[in-house]
Image 1 (cartoon, rainbow, N blue to C red):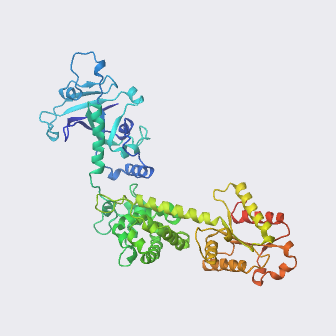
Image 2 (image 1 turned 180 degrees about the vertical axis):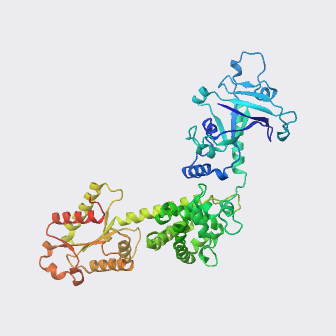
Amino acid sequence: MILSGILHFSLGGFTVIRGVAPLGELARISEYGDYQRNLIDTHRAEIERFLADRQYLFFPEVILSASLKFDFNAYKGKQTINPVADIFSGKGFTSNINSISVKVVKTKAPAQAIGGSEGAEIAYIELPEEQLTKGLKLFRIDGNHRLSAAHDAKPGDGNYNLPTPFCIVLHDDPSLAQRFERVVFHNINAKQIPLTSEENLRLILEDGEDRLFEDKVLLESQSFGPPYYLARKILADLDERYLTGIVKLLENRRTLALALSQFLAARDEAIGQAKDAVTLDAQVSRLRQAFQAVNAIYEKRLKLAESGCHGVLVAFLYFALHNDGKQLAAFERWAVSNRIDHLAPATMTQGLGYHYHLGRTQAVDAASLVSVFESILKARHREIFVSMAFRPETVETYKTIQKTVRQINDKHKLDIDLREIRIDNFNKGHSYTIDDEILKVIEGSGLLIADLTFGNRNVYHEIGYLMGLNRGKTLEQDNFILIADKKTRGEELESDIGFNLKSWQQLRFESTRVLEEGLTESLEIYYKLKGD
């Protein structure tokens, strides 16, 4: 592999070769150091889309480091070897360790632009293929993400052949090379003040007469796509005069709009499948209502309003949209009780304020919150609350329920167990009002098994409470199983069961075997564990 470029001194007195080469070749002959981050998948996808969009494709040069190693103890020649000096004198250099070689050809082209006066010097640096297969690599100082995105590209692929500007810094002292690589990497990444995504997005999403990109470009360009189009449409509704609860978060409204639209493109079916302007425009009213609903929560939750965290807000907006907003109130209670309202924005930049990188970090935070909460909802849905009179006559009934649940877990290898809860076995670690706690547990559980055998008043109260919850949430009355022990009560059972429950289907049993069989069938149907 041979690279060619102009040889000259750079700022700081370093010897460099500057040229242009295929992106895939530069990726093939280089590697990143242990002081750098490898490319994360989300960033890889962004860069691959950027590379695929040829219309605005431009980036500064990739910076690589080449160590001109030489074993002076093994050298038998008479001439003094000074790798960098020999290159500038026109002698060239060849390593007796890894066979890297540099040859220089003087041209007649003027070189004033690079600090010369008598003509440019073209350097050819060769990395032998047999050494590349043995692990010979140049080190990446800057441009690792661009190069990593082309790592798997093959000759002939579009990204592989992209002409890419490069700068190779030459060193004849390996220890100096290592120090240089780390210091320059630090200076490039730590001492510059990058544009925040809000500043970048101002140029991309700005609407009106002065906008740089038409709606069609945002919608169809591989560099942007539907989330960018939707973000522009969302911005028209983000007015602090009407969204007083989220004023602080609107300071970076463009970043918020893109973070939300990117997240919803991945999680919301209606938005994720929308690819045309008409369909996306139809979603704007949904989003407007979601912002209004969440703003009302933020107005009364001052910690949320003060936190300024886009990730939390995006999660709230998701639950305002998801399942017709039925989980929004539950998510609010969970977020506040777990101090999610205390989360701050992801990162700070140079003491100048909060830095958001194209909404990606904040969207990841939202994804984590949504995933955790949905897992909690799933776990609660798998909880079974057992409502019964706990007395000697019901011991076998309760043991049969326990046995049935355990057998279903073992049979279906569930990742989240079905759990039966008895309030008399429920320990919070502190004193509490049992009645209130019972109602909270019933509300959080996914299923109620109620034993009508002894006509216990508390059992009727708990069934009624659950029915009331279902009606208030416009849910079906399908999350409870009524059981009754005919053998224990005999003829008295019929007269004991209240009038309002007589018409509801009940699992009546005369033996624990019948209870076990009937309960197994009911639970497998309810949790959709039976095959078609």
